[in-house]
Length: 119
Image 1: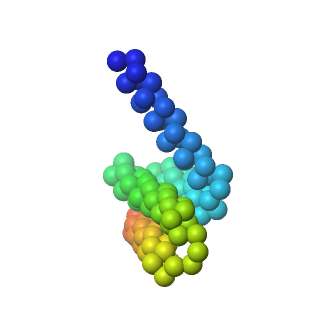
Image 2: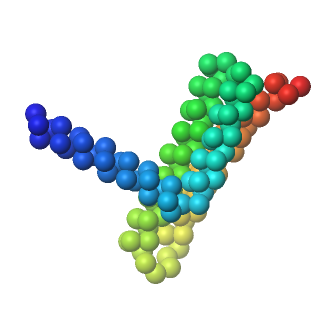
């Protein structure tokens, strides 16, 4: 039982280290985090409903997770293919496209939720 707890503790420690590394080294992660803070502060000021805040949080988490998956794919691709490779380029471009699509979807949701509060 104690070994299982130690393994879970180490797993959480490693996961938090990964999140901290993303904050320290990935400029886009900081941009997403800044946008997150702005959106959540605006949501609180405008008094959004619990459902609207839930939708925003899900969109935010999706974008942040996509950014971290993109970073992992890029790092793995660099490790496996240090020289230029068309396949590596495709992997990186598609993973960056994933983040872009998630971000566009989050912006659209944000517009749909916030616009009625301003008009």
